[in-house]
Length: 415
Image 1 (tube, one colour):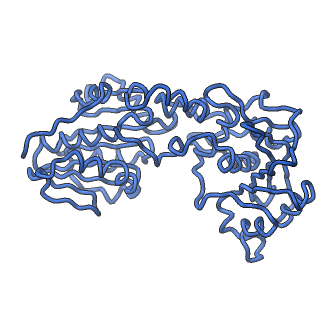
Image 2 (image 1 turned 135 degrees about the vertical axis):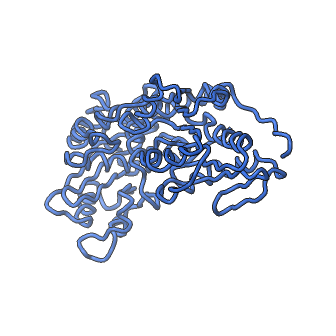
Image 3 (image 1 turned 135 degrees about the horizontal axis):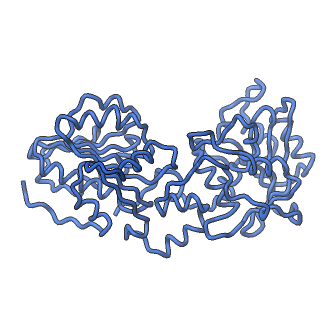
């Protein structure tokens, strides 16, 4: 093979790379350069152990392709590549080594392979069985190594338990934690700007690599400081309407955008099996047929048909004269929670959402909705989630303070 190309790592990346502990766990903030480090690790393994197989694993095939395939191809000199498979995301080197990129959404399909090394990228967002039942046995006969890299996902996850184990006296394990700034790829001023686009807990998790406990209240940013009896409707502005299509109750949250603030001045709670037609009539009764109304409904209402009348909930809203603002596919629950908490109180300490005390169900939802034990999902069994959801759809569509790149797990910036 040709001479190894000169590769550059930041100081924090190099600290992990230069350690040869068999199993390493890296928790890092967003844009740290985790995936770039992963590709270099795999390339080193393939050089050092000719004829062996190495896996890069991401939560999905699409993520593996989008995050690391192009990066890996840029790192490996053309003269080193014996064959390349663009569909299977596989490189065979001239020394007989194989580097394969895999999604773990169908982990059982990965069984039966013998591996000399593996990187689990965004490991916190994989199922535990990927490691325990598939990858760990595959490393046994070759005594292969493993590198786990991820942003955190709360303290109820298997990855957190792995992180804790890596701190024990087992000499085969070691761990590191680095913030986004410590990664050296993002200017401090950009990180500070993100404070105004995320709630405090999400900021700590995504940029400071902190494992945040998700066992308590969902609306952790809410307080009495968000309640203001002085706010009111401003009829000259469009009415923004968050809508949850639950059959009983059907819920609407009514707001206007006043400058950089969101004023939530009313709520519509309809019980007794009210239809979407009934809901639209109630909006017209309160605010007039001529009022410009932007409805932000549950995205699934684009397919759901109400009361067997043959039209979808979104179609009913449009036929009632409302503009419908909704994405083509449902939002992630995490994104909705982040958008709500950021509106209530961002990480810089600013409250941009004010709520009139007459919105009793919404306030009750903020004060009582908790996570289902052992998960990062709101507990639907409490019966207080409908107003929260309606408000969440409104925030996501019309008052989303987070940049697209800060939401979810689909946007990455590689070093």
